[in-house]
Image 1 (cartoon, rainbow, N blue to C red):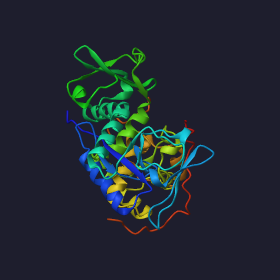
Image 2 (image 1 turned 180 degrees about the vertical axis):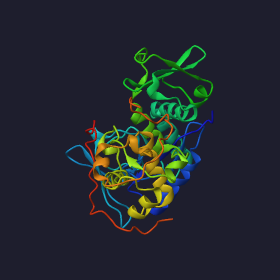
Image 3 (image 1 turned 45 degrees about the vertical axis):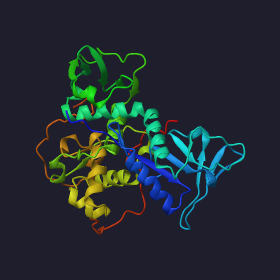
Length: 343
């Protein structure tokens, strides 16, 4: 098994261009065998750095981080809703505000230590990434039954489409590299107490956002594509591009990769990543027989395709920028209801 580490993304708020460059250098230096770091979108980041001197504590228990560049916007955060590691660079000037983690931005080693501390807090997600990587490598047919992942007699993980996945705390990619996938009768497994739990859809979606692999099968770049079903995920995890691509395939079933590229204006590499994420959660298919009835009703006539082989990512228990040819009218509504956001 190839040992792969995730790419974690650090979001910044309140920093000048020079400070952002310093943060980027610390992120690069923080790479370890557990994870690498890079700067990313604030809303989609795995962790945040906030400038303490530009952070205000509001009366409603919200933080407001003022921009440091003329074109920037302030960021407002509800303290009760923070769901990822966060650190503040010194000085922290808001009265009566004492954050748990502070550091000197000008000290690269201090920044690296903070990111390593963040990895400790994100260990459950890192273990989940390792399990998803093992699924990608071994390609078990998840719908065939329940699965136990064993290293000798140690139970590293349990995967069941109904129960979800359970992962032994602290498990590493090296542990999975030495493990075996063992199929059990459906419903014959239990997730032991203390194991971190996650749905299979969430597990694979999370992996698709952080892997550097191309998860889209080659024939998905050549054959016609169809919408199958909405991702079983909280709405807030969907990006506009995912919603746009699903709507394209609902309204025009059987579009090719190239046609989607021209219709949306999304470049080749990001289009592949967006489609990969939809593929691993079973939302798109190259097999018209597995397409959504909604797409079939909207299609007047489409060529038939030979059924494609079942993948590990078939989660159902039932078996350069191109100029866009057209743009939807900013309608990014999901084609079918998604799961409600879960706090």
